Image (cartoon, rainbow, N blue to C red; front, side, top):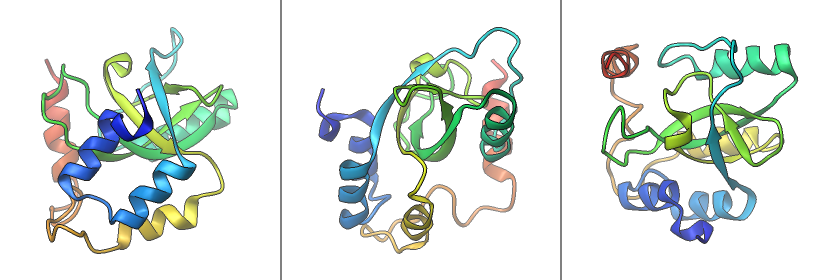
Length: 153
């Protein structure tokens, strides 16, 4: 599958989450990551805690932090809604996710270190579709609470 056909890229395009120039940047500098289960005994966190989880896993295990977008696994939702997310990687190929259940069934596309300023710019810009991002316009913690309810299967 080409990066252009990746489920996260398709979802970003279809939802208008990113401006075309930001999507092009992500395609040029980012990459697909394959979700993989965490090693046994690795601590996990609840929804909305990806920044904390990725930082702690970096400190404890030396895993790189990756920032990008992901699609929740089918065990949570069948909707292809791209969510800004952070995860870790040991090898720049596999996503080690301390938050999502079933990471091996999730889709990930992200940028490694060195793209932080550009990522902030991507998140702050207006949406080409005029639609609001899933992460804006919510009362603090509302999205995380909805995910928390979804994770309780």
